[in-house]
Length: 205
Image (cartoon, rainbow, N blue to C red):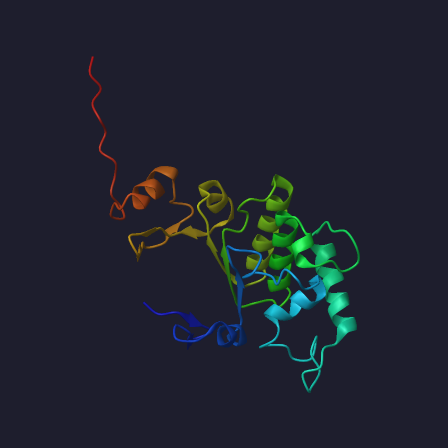
């Protein structure tokens, strides 16, 4: 298969090049991959902008617009209801759920053409999970393609237009959400071919 972003083959490109094409990423591991733990939230905004910023947070010569960064961080904190202590704490000072909300908000701030989110609500509380899910649904409604990788079937049924299953390194044909059931998705997870129906078992008297 091929990976295309806005018609461009992106399969061989690094993350920075994919970001320039309009991709956003929320990795499974928040600290270290999704955020720099020792940097304040405002500077963590640059993790998604260093390759694509057009003057919002970086000047013409690569200088950092600190006031704009602070404003951007405050806006994301407000929009995503991030609970924090202090004006601009380090990423490591946030709880897992609040850090995840900030990372999702940071990636959405760029209004990406494609958003890849790995385990969006893994290990977060119910309130944070609801806010993250709603934010991703809103992003999709605005026209972005949102690809969610999740082990939570309830989450996928709530958020998806279609569900595909990876089994032994092979991706199934997407099942439209109107045709998806826990049974047929479960069969795909077990390696069944699309359209396969479970064989009923006779019960002994």
